[in-house]
Image 1 (tube, rainbow over the protein chains, first blue to last red):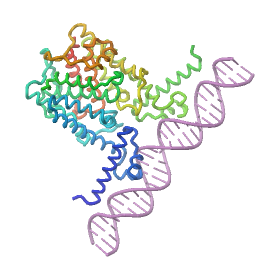
Image 2 (cartoon, rainbow over the protein chains, first blue to last red):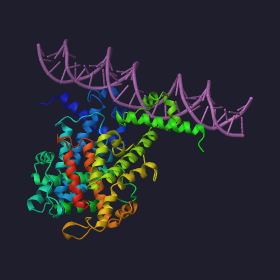
Image 3 (cartoon, chains in turn orange, blue, cyan, purple):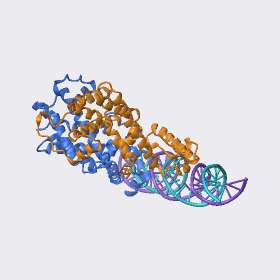
Image 4 (cartoon, chains in turn green, purple, yellow, orange):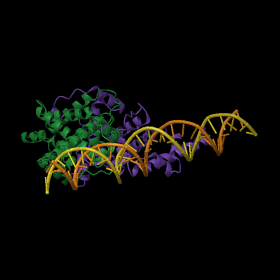
Length: 226
Length: 226
DNA sequence: TCGCAGTGCGAACACCGTTCGCAACGCGCT
DNA sequence: AGCGCGTTGCGAACGGTGTTCGCACTGCGA
Protein backbone atom coordinates (compact mmCIF):
# COMPACT_ATOMS: atom_id res chain seq x y z
CA UNK A 1 0.00 0.00 0.00
CA UNK A 2 1.09 3.52 -0.65
CA UNK A 3 2.35 5.29 2.41
CA UNK A 4 1.64 8.94 2.95
CA UNK A 5 5.17 9.81 1.96
CA UNK A 6 4.85 7.95 -1.29
CA UNK A 7 1.64 9.73 -2.14
CA UNK A 8 3.16 13.11 -1.44
CA UNK A 9 6.16 12.24 -3.50
CA UNK A 10 4.00 11.16 -6.41
CA UNK A 11 2.07 14.38 -6.17
CA UNK A 12 5.16 16.56 -6.17
CA UNK A 13 6.55 14.58 -9.06
CA UNK A 14 3.40 15.20 -11.06
CA UNK A 15 3.47 18.88 -10.19
CA UNK A 16 7.01 19.17 -11.49
CA UNK A 17 6.07 17.41 -14.69
CA UNK A 18 3.04 19.61 -15.19
CA UNK A 19 5.08 22.75 -14.69
CA UNK A 20 7.72 21.46 -17.06
CA UNK A 21 5.07 20.74 -19.66
CA UNK A 22 3.76 24.28 -19.36
CA UNK A 23 7.21 25.70 -19.88
CA UNK A 24 7.80 23.32 -22.78
CA UNK A 25 4.64 24.46 -24.55
CA UNK A 26 5.78 28.03 -24.53
CA UNK A 27 9.39 28.14 -25.52
CA UNK A 28 10.28 24.65 -26.63
CA UNK A 29 12.51 22.00 -25.22
CA UNK A 30 15.77 23.89 -25.64
CA UNK A 31 14.45 26.73 -23.50
CA UNK A 32 13.14 24.49 -20.75
CA UNK A 33 15.24 25.39 -17.74
CA UNK A 34 15.21 23.53 -14.47
CA UNK A 35 15.57 26.76 -12.57
CA UNK A 36 12.45 28.19 -14.17
CA UNK A 37 10.49 25.02 -13.48
CA UNK A 38 11.63 24.96 -9.88
CA UNK A 39 10.78 28.59 -9.38
CA UNK A 40 7.32 28.21 -10.89
CA UNK A 41 6.37 25.59 -8.32
CA UNK A 42 8.06 27.41 -5.45
CA UNK A 43 11.01 25.09 -5.11
CA UNK A 44 14.74 25.59 -5.22
CA UNK A 45 16.57 24.30 -8.28
CA UNK A 46 18.50 21.84 -6.17
CA UNK A 47 15.28 20.43 -4.78
CA UNK A 48 14.28 19.08 -8.18
CA UNK A 49 17.16 16.67 -8.03
CA UNK A 50 15.34 14.71 -5.35
CA UNK A 51 12.83 13.79 -8.05
CA UNK A 52 14.81 13.68 -11.28
CA UNK A 53 18.48 12.76 -11.48
CA UNK A 54 19.04 15.32 -14.24
CA UNK A 55 17.40 17.40 -16.90
CA UNK A 56 17.35 14.61 -19.47
CA UNK A 57 15.36 12.40 -17.14
CA UNK A 58 12.67 15.02 -16.87
CA UNK A 59 12.59 15.41 -20.64
CA UNK A 60 12.39 11.65 -21.03
CA UNK A 61 9.31 11.62 -18.85
CA UNK A 62 7.74 14.31 -20.99
CA UNK A 63 8.62 12.34 -24.10
CA UNK A 64 6.94 9.20 -22.82
CA UNK A 65 3.82 11.16 -21.93
CA UNK A 66 3.86 12.84 -25.34
CA UNK A 67 4.00 9.56 -27.22
CA UNK A 68 1.16 8.22 -25.15
CA UNK A 69 -0.97 11.31 -25.71
CA UNK A 70 -0.32 11.27 -29.45
CA UNK A 71 -1.09 7.56 -29.78
CA UNK A 72 -4.27 7.99 -27.78
CA UNK A 73 -5.39 10.91 -29.89
CA UNK A 74 -4.80 9.02 -33.13
CA UNK A 75 -6.60 5.95 -31.84
CA UNK A 76 -9.53 8.02 -30.65
CA UNK A 77 -9.96 9.70 -34.03
CA UNK A 78 -9.55 6.40 -35.82
CA UNK A 79 -12.27 4.72 -33.79
CA UNK A 80 -14.64 7.66 -33.97
CA UNK A 81 -14.33 8.00 -37.72
CA UNK A 82 -17.51 7.57 -39.71
CA UNK A 83 -15.85 7.50 -43.11
CA UNK A 84 -12.28 6.49 -43.81
CA UNK A 85 -10.63 5.51 -40.53
CA UNK A 86 -7.17 5.61 -42.05
CA UNK A 87 -7.58 9.19 -43.23
CA UNK A 88 -9.08 10.15 -39.89
CA UNK A 89 -6.07 8.75 -38.07
CA UNK A 90 -3.63 10.55 -40.36
CA UNK A 91 -5.47 13.83 -39.93
CA UNK A 92 -5.45 13.38 -36.16
CA UNK A 93 -1.72 12.80 -36.26
CA UNK A 94 -1.20 16.00 -38.21
CA UNK A 95 -3.59 17.96 -36.02
CA UNK A 96 -1.84 16.91 -32.83
CA UNK A 97 1.55 17.86 -34.25
CA UNK A 98 0.34 21.29 -35.27
CA UNK A 99 -1.45 21.84 -31.98
CA UNK A 100 1.58 20.81 -29.91
CA UNK A 101 4.58 21.68 -32.05
CA UNK A 102 7.08 21.79 -29.21
CA UNK A 103 6.01 18.45 -27.84
CA UNK A 104 6.07 17.00 -31.34
CA UNK A 105 9.58 18.36 -31.80
CA UNK A 106 10.60 16.67 -28.59
CA UNK A 107 9.23 13.36 -29.87
CA UNK A 108 10.43 13.43 -33.44
CA UNK A 109 12.90 16.27 -33.73
CA UNK A 110 16.61 16.29 -33.10
CA UNK A 111 17.34 13.46 -30.68
CA UNK A 112 18.80 14.31 -27.29
CA UNK A 113 22.59 14.07 -27.61
CA UNK A 114 23.92 10.58 -26.97
CA UNK A 115 20.64 9.58 -25.43
CA UNK A 116 19.70 6.02 -26.16
CA UNK A 117 16.14 5.06 -25.36
CA UNK A 118 16.41 1.99 -23.16
CA UNK A 119 15.23 -1.05 -25.03
CA UNK A 120 11.63 -1.73 -24.07
CA UNK A 121 11.82 1.31 -21.84
CA UNK A 122 8.73 3.48 -21.51
CA UNK A 123 9.64 5.73 -24.42
CA UNK A 124 10.32 2.87 -26.82
CA UNK A 125 7.05 1.19 -26.05
CA UNK A 126 5.06 4.39 -26.27
CA UNK A 127 6.72 5.25 -29.55
CA UNK A 128 5.77 1.90 -31.00
CA UNK A 129 2.18 2.49 -30.00
CA UNK A 130 2.00 5.55 -32.22
CA UNK A 131 2.88 3.54 -35.30
CA UNK A 132 0.59 0.76 -34.20
CA UNK A 133 -2.34 3.16 -34.03
CA UNK A 134 -2.39 3.24 -37.81
CA UNK A 135 -2.52 -0.51 -38.20
CA UNK A 136 -6.17 -1.47 -37.53
CA UNK A 137 -7.58 0.17 -40.67
CA UNK A 138 -4.95 -1.71 -42.64
CA UNK A 139 -5.95 -4.97 -41.05
CA UNK A 140 -9.56 -4.23 -41.91
CA UNK A 141 -8.67 -3.61 -45.53
CA UNK A 142 -6.67 -6.79 -45.60
CA UNK A 143 -9.66 -8.72 -44.29
CA UNK A 144 -11.93 -7.12 -46.85
CA UNK A 145 -9.42 -8.01 -49.54
CA UNK A 146 -9.11 -4.44 -50.78
CA UNK A 147 -5.60 -3.92 -49.48
CA UNK A 148 -3.04 -3.10 -52.06
CA UNK A 149 -0.58 -5.93 -52.41
CA UNK A 150 2.49 -6.36 -54.54
CA UNK A 151 3.32 -3.73 -57.10
CA UNK A 152 1.07 -2.10 -59.65
CA UNK A 153 0.98 -3.41 -63.16
CA UNK A 154 1.51 -6.92 -61.90
CA UNK A 155 5.26 -6.48 -61.70
CA UNK A 156 7.05 -9.06 -59.64
CA UNK A 157 6.79 -8.28 -55.96
CA UNK A 158 10.01 -7.32 -54.27
CA UNK A 159 11.39 -9.95 -51.95
CA UNK A 160 10.37 -8.78 -48.50
CA UNK A 161 13.34 -7.66 -46.44
CA UNK A 162 13.63 -9.48 -43.18
CA UNK A 163 13.17 -6.19 -41.35
CA UNK A 164 9.66 -6.09 -42.76
CA UNK A 165 8.94 -9.42 -41.16
CA UNK A 166 10.15 -8.05 -37.86
CA UNK A 167 7.85 -5.12 -38.34
CA UNK A 168 4.96 -7.40 -39.23
CA UNK A 169 5.50 -9.43 -36.11
CA UNK A 170 5.80 -6.34 -33.94
CA UNK A 171 2.49 -4.88 -34.99
CA UNK A 172 0.78 -8.25 -35.30
CA UNK A 173 0.10 -7.90 -38.99
CA UNK A 174 0.15 -10.46 -41.79
CA UNK A 175 3.48 -10.09 -43.58
CA UNK A 176 1.80 -9.24 -46.86
CA UNK A 177 0.32 -6.15 -45.27
CA UNK A 178 3.45 -5.05 -43.42
CA UNK A 179 4.96 -3.28 -46.40
CA UNK A 180 1.77 -1.30 -46.81
CA UNK A 181 1.66 -0.32 -43.15
CA UNK A 182 5.29 0.70 -43.17
CA UNK A 183 4.87 2.77 -46.30
CA UNK A 184 1.79 4.43 -44.86
CA UNK A 185 3.44 5.31 -41.59
CA UNK A 186 6.55 6.81 -43.15
CA UNK A 187 4.58 8.73 -45.77
CA UNK A 188 2.27 10.31 -43.22
CA UNK A 189 5.13 11.20 -40.93
CA UNK A 190 7.13 12.72 -43.76
CA UNK A 191 4.41 15.14 -44.67
CA UNK A 192 3.59 16.08 -41.10
CA UNK A 193 7.16 16.56 -39.95
CA UNK A 194 7.99 18.77 -42.91
CA UNK A 195 4.97 20.94 -42.29
CA UNK A 196 5.34 21.13 -38.52
CA UNK A 197 8.98 22.13 -38.71
CA UNK A 198 8.28 24.86 -41.21
CA UNK A 199 9.77 23.33 -44.33
CA UNK A 200 6.58 23.86 -46.27
CA UNK A 201 6.38 27.52 -45.39
CA UNK A 202 7.44 28.63 -48.87
CA UNK A 203 4.06 27.48 -50.19
CA UNK A 204 2.78 30.57 -48.45
CA UNK A 205 -0.64 29.08 -48.24
CA UNK A 206 -2.60 26.91 -45.88
CA UNK A 207 -1.23 23.38 -46.35
CA UNK A 208 -4.33 21.80 -44.85
CA UNK A 209 -6.07 21.02 -48.16
CA UNK A 210 -2.82 19.64 -49.49
CA UNK A 211 -2.49 17.33 -46.51
CA UNK A 212 -6.08 16.18 -46.68
CA UNK A 213 -5.83 15.52 -50.37
CA UNK A 214 -2.59 13.64 -49.88
CA UNK A 215 -4.00 11.46 -47.12
CA UNK A 216 -7.09 10.60 -49.12
CA UNK A 217 -4.98 9.73 -52.14
CA UNK A 218 -2.77 7.60 -49.94
CA UNK A 219 -5.78 5.76 -48.58
CA UNK A 220 -7.06 5.08 -52.09
CA UNK A 221 -3.61 3.92 -53.11
CA UNK A 222 -3.27 1.56 -50.22
CA UNK A 223 -6.79 0.25 -50.48
CA UNK A 224 -7.79 1.32 -46.99
CA UNK A 225 -10.55 3.62 -48.21
CA UNK A 226 -13.99 2.20 -47.49
CA UNK B 1 37.77 44.82 -56.21
CA UNK B 2 38.48 43.05 -52.97
CA UNK B 3 40.80 44.89 -50.68
CA UNK B 4 43.34 43.04 -48.65
CA UNK B 5 41.24 43.51 -45.52
CA UNK B 6 38.21 42.05 -47.21
CA UNK B 7 40.15 39.01 -48.30
CA UNK B 8 41.50 38.43 -44.83
CA UNK B 9 38.06 38.82 -43.38
CA UNK B 10 36.63 36.31 -45.82
CA UNK B 11 39.37 33.89 -44.94
CA UNK B 12 38.83 34.21 -41.20
CA UNK B 13 35.11 33.83 -41.71
CA UNK B 14 35.67 30.60 -43.61
CA UNK B 15 38.04 29.35 -40.95
CA UNK B 16 35.45 29.93 -38.26
CA UNK B 17 32.83 28.11 -40.27
CA UNK B 18 35.14 25.18 -40.94
CA UNK B 19 36.00 24.87 -37.27
CA UNK B 20 32.33 25.08 -36.36
CA UNK B 21 31.53 22.33 -38.85
CA UNK B 22 34.17 20.11 -37.32
CA UNK B 23 32.73 20.63 -33.87
CA UNK B 24 29.22 20.07 -35.20
CA UNK B 25 30.16 16.73 -36.72
CA UNK B 26 31.36 15.43 -33.42
CA UNK B 27 28.87 16.35 -30.79
CA UNK B 28 25.92 17.79 -32.63
CA UNK B 29 24.41 21.22 -32.83
CA UNK B 30 23.39 21.48 -29.20
CA UNK B 31 26.97 20.89 -28.09
CA UNK B 32 28.47 23.40 -30.49
CA UNK B 33 29.93 26.10 -28.24
CA UNK B 34 31.31 29.38 -29.45
CA UNK B 35 34.06 29.24 -26.88
CA UNK B 36 35.27 25.88 -28.18
CA UNK B 37 35.19 27.11 -31.77
CA UNK B 38 37.08 30.25 -30.86
CA UNK B 39 39.66 28.34 -28.93
CA UNK B 40 40.21 25.82 -31.73
CA UNK B 41 41.19 28.58 -34.14
CA UNK B 42 43.19 30.50 -31.57
CA UNK B 43 40.76 33.31 -31.05
CA UNK B 44 39.00 34.74 -28.05
CA UNK B 45 35.25 34.07 -27.73
CA UNK B 46 34.53 37.76 -28.00
CA UNK B 47 36.45 37.97 -31.24
CA UNK B 48 33.95 35.77 -33.02
CA UNK B 49 31.35 38.48 -32.64
CA UNK B 50 33.19 40.55 -35.21
CA UNK B 51 32.16 37.89 -37.74
CA UNK B 52 28.84 36.57 -36.52
CA UNK B 53 26.34 38.62 -34.54
CA UNK B 54 25.42 35.58 -32.45
CA UNK B 55 25.43 31.83 -32.25
CA UNK B 56 22.30 31.42 -34.33
CA UNK B 57 23.85 33.29 -37.21
CA UNK B 58 26.74 30.86 -37.29
CA UNK B 59 24.33 27.93 -37.21
CA UNK B 60 22.31 29.51 -39.99
CA UNK B 61 25.41 29.63 -42.14
CA UNK B 62 26.06 25.97 -41.45
CA UNK B 63 22.44 25.20 -42.32
CA UNK B 64 22.68 26.92 -45.67
CA UNK B 65 25.88 25.06 -46.49
CA UNK B 66 24.30 21.80 -45.41
CA UNK B 67 21.28 22.22 -47.66
CA UNK B 68 23.57 23.03 -50.57
CA UNK B 69 25.77 20.01 -49.93
CA UNK B 70 22.78 17.69 -49.62
CA UNK B 71 21.16 19.02 -52.78
CA UNK B 72 24.40 18.68 -54.68
CA UNK B 73 24.91 15.14 -53.50
CA UNK B 74 21.40 14.10 -54.50
CA UNK B 75 21.76 15.75 -57.90
CA UNK B 76 25.11 14.10 -58.49
CA UNK B 77 23.76 10.64 -57.73
CA UNK B 78 20.67 11.28 -59.82
CA UNK B 79 22.70 12.30 -62.87
CA UNK B 80 25.22 9.50 -62.49
CA UNK B 81 22.57 6.82 -62.16
CA UNK B 82 22.59 4.12 -64.78
CA UNK B 83 19.29 2.54 -63.79
CA UNK B 84 16.49 4.29 -61.97
CA UNK B 85 17.48 7.91 -61.38
CA UNK B 86 14.65 8.44 -58.90
CA UNK B 87 15.78 5.55 -56.73
CA UNK B 88 19.38 6.68 -56.99
CA UNK B 89 18.43 10.15 -55.77
CA UNK B 90 16.45 8.75 -52.87
CA UNK B 91 19.28 6.47 -51.85
CA UNK B 92 21.72 9.36 -52.02
CA UNK B 93 19.44 11.39 -49.78
CA UNK B 94 19.35 8.59 -47.24
CA UNK B 95 23.08 7.98 -47.48
CA UNK B 96 23.92 11.63 -46.87
CA UNK B 97 21.64 11.76 -43.84
CA UNK B 98 23.22 8.66 -42.32
CA UNK B 99 26.74 9.85 -43.10
CA UNK B 100 26.15 13.30 -41.61
CA UNK B 101 23.52 12.78 -38.93
CA UNK B 102 24.31 15.92 -36.99
CA UNK B 103 24.17 18.13 -40.04
CA UNK B 104 20.97 16.42 -41.13
CA UNK B 105 19.52 17.06 -37.70
CA UNK B 106 20.42 20.70 -38.04
CA UNK B 107 18.60 20.86 -41.38
CA UNK B 108 15.49 18.88 -40.60
CA UNK B 109 15.40 18.39 -36.86
CA UNK B 110 13.96 20.61 -34.19
CA UNK B 111 13.92 24.13 -35.59
CA UNK B 112 15.98 26.79 -33.85
CA UNK B 113 13.70 28.51 -31.33
CA UNK B 114 11.75 31.39 -32.81
CA UNK B 115 14.03 31.40 -35.80
CA UNK B 116 12.24 32.24 -38.99
CA UNK B 117 14.19 31.64 -42.18
CA UNK B 118 14.09 34.93 -44.01
CA UNK B 119 11.90 34.64 -47.05
CA UNK B 120 14.11 33.98 -50.06
CA UNK B 121 17.05 34.06 -47.69
CA UNK B 122 19.93 31.69 -48.36
CA UNK B 123 18.49 28.89 -46.24
CA UNK B 124 15.04 29.00 -47.85
CA UNK B 125 16.47 28.85 -51.34
CA UNK B 126 18.89 26.09 -50.51
CA UNK B 127 16.13 24.12 -48.84
CA UNK B 128 13.99 24.37 -51.93
CA UNK B 129 16.84 23.04 -54.03
CA UNK B 130 16.84 19.80 -52.07
CA UNK B 131 13.25 19.08 -52.97
CA UNK B 132 13.86 20.23 -56.51
CA UNK B 133 16.67 17.70 -56.90
CA UNK B 134 14.05 14.96 -57.03
CA UNK B 135 12.02 16.58 -59.77
CA UNK B 136 13.92 15.80 -63.00
CA UNK B 137 13.21 12.05 -62.96
CA UNK B 138 9.57 12.89 -62.48
CA UNK B 139 9.62 15.24 -65.43
CA UNK B 140 11.22 12.52 -67.50
CA UNK B 141 8.51 10.06 -66.56
CA UNK B 142 5.89 12.64 -67.39
CA UNK B 143 7.42 13.14 -70.82
CA UNK B 144 7.55 9.40 -71.39
CA UNK B 145 3.93 9.17 -70.34
CA UNK B 146 4.60 6.58 -67.65
CA UNK B 147 3.97 8.93 -64.74
CA UNK B 148 1.22 7.91 -62.43
CA UNK B 149 -1.66 10.33 -62.66
CA UNK B 150 -4.96 10.53 -60.90
CA UNK B 151 -5.96 7.79 -58.54
CA UNK B 152 -5.83 4.06 -59.07
CA UNK B 153 -8.91 2.22 -60.17
CA UNK B 154 -10.01 5.17 -62.23
CA UNK B 155 -11.59 6.93 -59.27
CA UNK B 156 -12.27 10.60 -59.75
CA UNK B 157 -9.14 12.62 -59.27
CA UNK B 158 -9.10 14.86 -56.24
CA UNK B 159 -9.43 18.51 -57.03
CA UNK B 160 -5.90 19.85 -56.83
CA UNK B 161 -5.42 22.15 -53.85
CA UNK B 162 -4.14 25.55 -54.80
CA UNK B 163 -1.00 24.88 -52.75
CA UNK B 164 -0.16 22.16 -55.24
CA UNK B 165 -0.26 24.68 -58.04
CA UNK B 166 2.13 26.88 -56.11
CA UNK B 167 4.37 23.90 -55.68
CA UNK B 168 4.15 23.06 -59.36
CA UNK B 169 5.10 26.59 -60.30
CA UNK B 170 7.97 26.65 -57.83
CA UNK B 171 9.64 23.53 -59.17
CA UNK B 172 8.65 24.25 -62.77
CA UNK B 173 6.56 21.14 -63.13
CA UNK B 174 3.31 20.55 -65.00
CA UNK B 175 0.53 20.69 -62.42
CA UNK B 176 -0.54 17.13 -63.14
CA UNK B 177 2.85 15.91 -61.97
CA UNK B 178 3.08 18.15 -58.93
CA UNK B 179 1.05 15.84 -56.72
CA UNK B 180 3.36 12.99 -57.60
CA UNK B 181 6.48 15.01 -56.87
CA UNK B 182 5.10 16.21 -53.56
CA UNK B 183 4.11 12.72 -52.52
CA UNK B 184 7.51 11.38 -53.49
CA UNK B 185 9.40 14.02 -51.59
CA UNK B 186 7.42 13.64 -48.38
CA UNK B 187 7.50 9.84 -48.53
CA UNK B 188 11.25 9.70 -48.95
CA UNK B 189 11.84 12.22 -46.23
CA UNK B 190 9.53 10.40 -43.83
CA UNK B 191 11.46 7.18 -44.09
CA UNK B 192 14.87 8.82 -43.88
CA UNK B 193 14.08 11.10 -40.97
CA UNK B 194 12.62 8.27 -38.93
CA UNK B 195 15.67 6.11 -39.52
CA UNK B 196 18.22 8.86 -38.99
CA UNK B 197 16.70 9.97 -35.71
CA UNK B 198 16.60 6.43 -34.38
CA UNK B 199 12.89 5.76 -34.50
CA UNK B 200 13.40 2.58 -36.46
CA UNK B 201 15.89 1.17 -34.00
CA UNK B 202 13.39 -1.34 -32.61
CA UNK B 203 13.65 -3.30 -35.85
CA UNK B 204 17.01 -4.30 -34.52
CA UNK B 205 18.21 -5.03 -38.00
CA UNK B 206 19.86 -3.18 -40.82
CA UNK B 207 17.14 -1.01 -42.34
CA UNK B 208 19.04 -0.62 -45.61
CA UNK B 209 17.23 -3.38 -47.51
CA UNK B 210 13.95 -2.04 -46.23
CA UNK B 211 14.76 1.43 -47.51
CA UNK B 212 15.93 0.18 -50.87
CA UNK B 213 12.88 -1.96 -51.29
CA UNK B 214 10.65 0.92 -50.30
CA UNK B 215 12.28 3.34 -52.73
CA UNK B 216 12.03 0.88 -55.58
CA UNK B 217 8.38 0.22 -54.82
CA UNK B 218 7.78 3.94 -54.66
CA UNK B 219 9.40 4.42 -58.05
CA UNK B 220 7.25 1.69 -59.57
CA UNK B 221 4.17 3.22 -57.98
CA UNK B 222 4.91 6.66 -59.30
CA UNK B 223 5.92 5.45 -62.71
CA UNK B 224 9.40 6.88 -62.56
CA UNK B 225 11.08 3.52 -62.93
CA UNK B 226 12.66 3.09 -66.37
C1' DT C 1 52.40 60.69 -42.11
C1' DC C 2 48.32 60.82 -39.86
C1' DG C 3 43.58 59.44 -38.61
C1' DC C 4 40.34 56.24 -38.12
C1' DA C 5 37.80 52.08 -39.29
C1' DG C 6 38.62 47.44 -38.54
C1' DT C 7 40.06 43.89 -35.51
C1' DG C 8 40.97 41.40 -31.29
C1' DC C 9 40.99 40.71 -26.42
C1' DG C 10 40.18 40.59 -21.28
C1' DA C 11 36.95 41.16 -17.96
C1' DA C 12 32.53 41.01 -16.62
C1' DC C 13 27.39 39.79 -16.44
C1' DA C 14 23.53 36.81 -16.33
C1' DC C 15 22.08 32.44 -16.90
C1' DC C 16 22.46 27.49 -17.07
C1' DG C 17 22.88 22.35 -15.04
C1' DT C 18 24.72 20.18 -11.30
C1' DT C 19 26.94 19.02 -6.63
C1' DC C 20 27.53 19.19 -1.76
C1' DG C 21 26.79 19.76 3.09
C1' DC C 22 23.66 20.99 6.33
C1' DA C 23 19.12 21.77 8.56
C1' DA C 24 14.51 20.51 9.30
C1' DC C 25 10.78 17.34 9.11
C1' DG C 26 7.88 13.49 10.10
C1' DC C 27 7.04 8.36 9.23
C1' DG C 28 7.45 4.14 11.35
C1' DC C 29 9.34 1.41 14.79
C1' DT C 30 10.22 0.27 19.65
C1' DA D 1 5.14 8.35 23.71
C1' DG D 2 9.38 9.12 22.12
C1' DC D 3 13.10 8.42 19.42
C1' DG D 4 16.02 7.41 15.09
C1' DC D 5 16.82 7.99 10.71
C1' DG D 6 15.44 8.13 5.99
C1' DT D 7 13.42 11.76 3.31
C1' DT D 8 13.05 16.24 1.77
C1' DG D 9 14.52 20.90 0.85
C1' DC D 10 17.68 24.65 0.55
C1' DG D 11 21.76 27.90 0.14
C1' DA D 12 26.01 28.31 -1.68
C1' DA D 13 29.18 27.18 -4.85
C1' DC D 14 31.52 25.37 -9.32
C1' DG D 15 32.26 25.18 -14.06
C1' DG D 16 30.14 26.00 -18.13
C1' DT D 17 27.46 28.85 -21.58
C1' DG D 18 26.23 33.19 -24.80
C1' DT D 19 26.88 37.88 -24.92
C1' DT D 20 28.41 42.87 -23.98
C1' DC D 21 31.57 46.52 -23.27
C1' DG D 22 35.60 49.30 -23.21
C1' DC D 23 40.14 49.42 -24.29
C1' DA D 24 44.41 48.44 -27.12
C1' DC D 25 46.43 47.76 -31.37
C1' DT D 26 47.04 47.41 -36.30
C1' DG D 27 47.39 48.78 -40.92
C1' DC D 28 44.58 50.74 -44.96
C1' DG D 29 43.43 54.95 -47.27
C1' DA D 30 43.79 59.80 -47.66
